[in-house]
Length: 438
Ligand code: ADP
Ligand code: ASP
Ligand code: MG
Image (cartoon, rainbow, N blue to C red; front, side):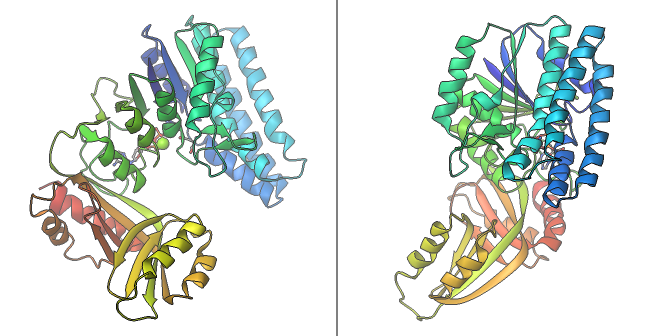
């Protein structure tokens, strides 16, 4: 069985929902993962933020605009009065849940519950559309099988056991529709896999059911060699290895949630990126194969903080790195880049949640300097160490860009450079002009 995921734009209008229906309804049994209609999760986050700030009037205003939008969707989506009525009941039920938080104490559970309603809406409405058109369709609630643990990591055993059980116990269907993004946490409350998380849902389900392939359907024809939001003349890549795609996703390529690739890689399940607006295009295939050598693509990750620690003890100070890394481990703060000299080490982090505590503990071992508003630009490809010239090509492409840190050699497929975020666009464009499109 295949798992197909459709993103926000793909289900973002009545026309697009109909296009998705026509696209999936080929008689082959599949699990379909849907995001919220585009814009909905942003509105829900806005509502939650207003409620957090006790600004109930502004929250109510956005709720009413959003409810109005969904009532119009229902009116246009279905042909029969029965389904229009059913759609209205779905919408009013969901908005009753959202409104209930405008008159109660607001906390994190409330926030996560509100933010989850977009996927609950799109999947419930889409299931009714499929049924209205005579397709054998079953709605599966991701809240019954998708789970994260205390460290917010996906609980793959729980997911496998529970989705298997659900599929055994529900009536057989051709199309199973479920929500991306949403899950339960270790306390059993509604939670999510972070923004863009529907991609991750699809590979977690793919791994749990040993799917033959996971297809991620979006609003672009596949993985491009540079970020089309910032750079002109980007080109689609036909094939990437799991490792290459994982690095690009982790280092900011928005087309894939950072954790999407791992479940697929562990079970060796190919992931294909496809364009909902142009289904006949072959898209990008991500698999265990790497079809060509050389530099394939670049991506950039913002919100990076660099920390430089200069040891108080000069030269031959063994144990220094161990002490430094233990501090980051204690505060569960992952390090992305590392660069060392005899007496100092620079690292980058993307979470500043414990920055103050980390800095104050690091000061026991050395002088600490913190630099913010940085971006990691990651250059990915199959760069076998024996082949010469990759590093030289990258550095000459970036001749005019001041580079704050470099990481090369950790793997065969990644060179990372750290630049000021204000220089990110220029850096990406320089790599396109001088490296990717030559
Ligand atoms: P969806 O809602 O389908 O999940 P996203 O907006 O999350 O879609 O991801 C698709 C978007 O990712 C594209 O429209 C594009 O602007 C952006 N993007 C960023 N980097 C890349 C890249 N390297 N290749 C393709 N798209 C990219
Ligand atoms: N709806 C969620 C978001 O906007 C998840 C997703 O689209 O993947 O972040
Ligand atoms: Mg996305």
